[in-house]
Image 1 (cartoon, helix red, strand yellow):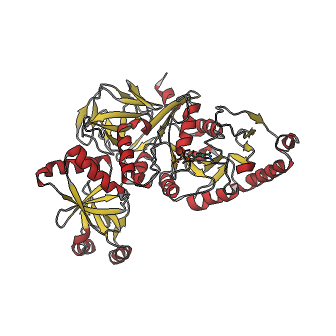
Image 2 (cartoon, rainbow, N blue to C red):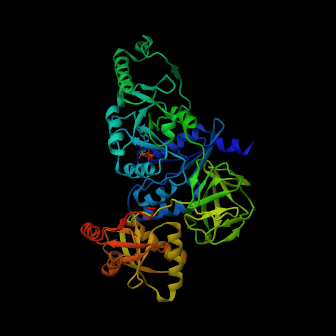
Image 3 (spheres, rainbow, N blue to C red):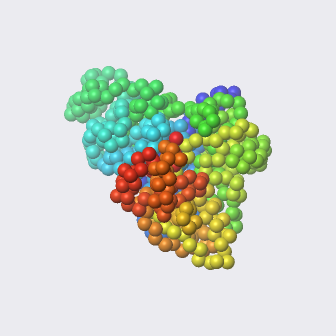
Length: 529
Ligand code: G4P
């Protein structure tokens, strides 16, 4: 198959949701359609049920060892589909944000009863910042939930989406009768049989036909007709161009658990979802069909088995082909590297692969030369943009508890930060190290991993910070900036890339600082250029 055809075959996407909305269940059903797995329950649930530390450690360990669920690939209708795992738990939000830099589109899963939840809001905001095409799947229609129109309103108001329903439910919960597929103009009746792989659909071009009464009853037929009239009156028609530009979001309804409405979603997805998109580097825009290989590391998985210390760096192929045993330039190190056993992912297995195409994810064994954001090329000096850091929520001083192991501690901290487990800030005034995390539990994970993987011990000390703000002065030589540096010295630190960060101790002090030094912009993310 030609290179161009391979590119057109690929759909690389992420499923995002608030925990418990049904992401794992939907992923599993999609894999069933692809014939990639034989039975339900095969996809490992990386979810944290309790917030007990032991549970969390176990999950971390599993995530480290069983990297298989990080990328799930399968074939469907001759398309190669790559699903990238995006943890829903908020403590892994950074991981998800980074993964979103490697997807070409997303499916957002919403629980019909809960509607738009906190984590969904945050994740969709990141997608919208990047104009990532979004399809919404409203799940659990077999349960009582919110009215469909109210949910569509919520999507518009809370997520700022411009929705267009491509299917519409007939009843819900106990009265759930099925779904009318607006996109394909057919009816799909709900039987509640989760074992069914392919549902029978009834072609139904003319919704006014009296046949409808015969099939779903007078009351349901009348209400479906009214609903569809409202849908056509209120919502814009589906426009693929606008969807691809991130300006319009199609909505589907269904029940992942019952494998209902999933085929409609998948069929539409393979038809409309984008093929591998061009990506912006600092230097230029790189197109997928360029001959030379380029790619970037968006995720690093540690192998938490102390006997196997290597890590797996996940590289998204942006352009060209990635080939086994061919030398590639590690741009940051200006060094050529060859990979003898690159991994590709297929369903829940990983295997060595000779050639990978744009849109694919390759797993490279690494002993510490990669960090998140690194770019690989065939020689061109290129740095992909867009792996931002966000302000952590929790901050603590990290102290060495075993003076004999200072070297191990520093190495451990360095590598964990490269993996993106947390962020390190070094105070300008005294060089003390501060760790910032998204969730409080991560401090324990770091302590545990430093001890078990690096033989180093650490203790923490509270450091009250409200937000870390990346400093962006209008003029580095201005009086105002000099004064800011002098007065705020105690609160200034460098992040791992050497960027200056202001650690505001309260919302109030942040506001005051902004008012006092208006020409010094303070950002909650490291990506502001
Ligand atoms: P997540 O990955 O987004 O966190 O959600 P997950 O798929 O694990 O689903 C969360 C819970 O919701 C699971 O129940 C799952 O069975 C249920 N669920 C998913 N889709 C549907 C649906 O369409 N209808 C109904 N009624 N339930 C659905 P659980 O009891 O938490 O877990 P389990 O013990 O069933 O695995």
